[in-house]
Length: 431
Image (cartoon, rainbow, N blue to C red; front, side, top):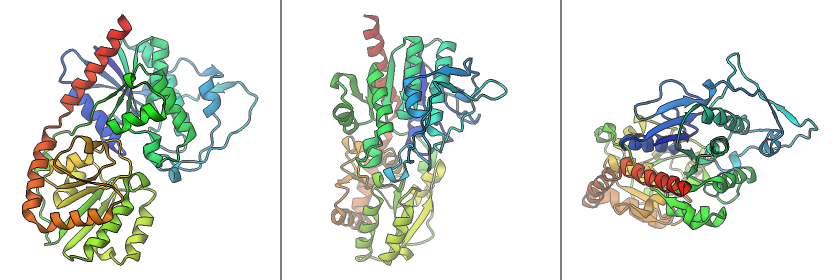
């Protein structure tokens, strides 16, 4: 079986969990006999690991069409003006303002370089909507170039490409929902992003969600049949860096928040809980590792509470820097308001770090050796932090059991579940 898979990013060029999940899943799929993956991204840099896939950069594919006629998707998106950057899991405050331009010209021009290729940035900036549409144009060309049995599109950025490939090939489409705009926005859904998500789901032959939490949203908010939506949980990739313990050079405990500093991730609850803990004990430091639109607000709040001498902001971390941070940590906290899954707790558990996660996360559906709280219950969060930091036997038990649990959550198992979805969809098409 050959899979034509569309994503938006691939390690080492990632901005969050989407690229990490794509890498882990495709590596797991490489263990399945006679299964081949052609993975397409807007821009290929050349240093991506390709041991498990054939990587294709859309920006390297010459397009045969440089002038195309009016299309419903283009007419809705072509003249959107962008005033700010957009990242794949951003909040409403980070969404750009959209301004329509009126026009009577019913044709559109696609700019190509000297090689006849559409240049892509592969980023999440001002040209994002245009690049999403151009990506779908190139997807049509790619779908004509390769033989394949099924199409797999990861998240809303790649849905139009998946739809385009299905349209020209007639092959079935599976969309993979890593998050929805209801998660990213806290409920203030961007109508254009929602429309792209719904079009992807409506055109899909099957939808894979990363948790039952996300499955319920897809069914209830996007009007999808329950029979069409299947949950396949994410996993964690083994990493030797998780086994290396770092010397802190100090006696103080370290409590870490690692993720985007945005509304969805609940960073304010981490700060408030830290304040409560510091009123009870002094030998502890809190680290907020990440970046996002709420970072300045969090710095200001920590300063107003008088805890900046015990609070540190590292900025965005990726790769082995993540595991280095975990290896310095005595406790990891993910207080997300709405988390489709959450891979970082698994990485922390791999490193032997006890974790506290919100009940409002997809990963809480499968973890048994993590402390689960409501994101808003900062009193319970503070009490749990205090207990783990002050009772070594409790911390050790959670750490050892958590490491074993995380080590048993393998991408190879997730890949087998995805393979079952492929076979089911192909069988239905052949009936």
